Image 1 (cartoon, rainbow, N blue to C red):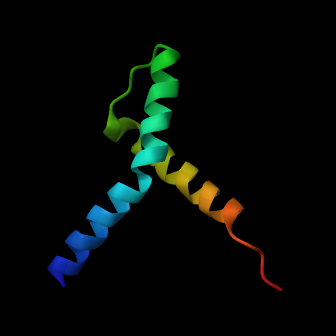
Image 2 (cartoon, helix red, strand yellow; image 1 turned 45 degrees about the vertical axis):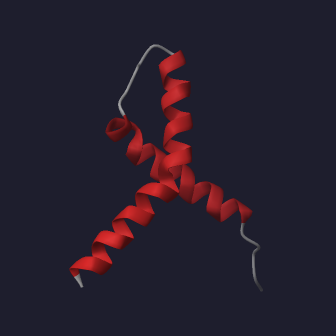
Length: 59
């Protein structure tokens, strides 16, 4: 059970990394210079929005 949770956490962090990293670059250009952990919540939301918009809507 613990191994499964750790594996799920690692997969979750790897899956949300691209969106979080791009947000870090964008917010850094605005002068905010936030860390990975500060932008992770917004990265999670962006990842969920991208996944939802790319999925096909079923009947």
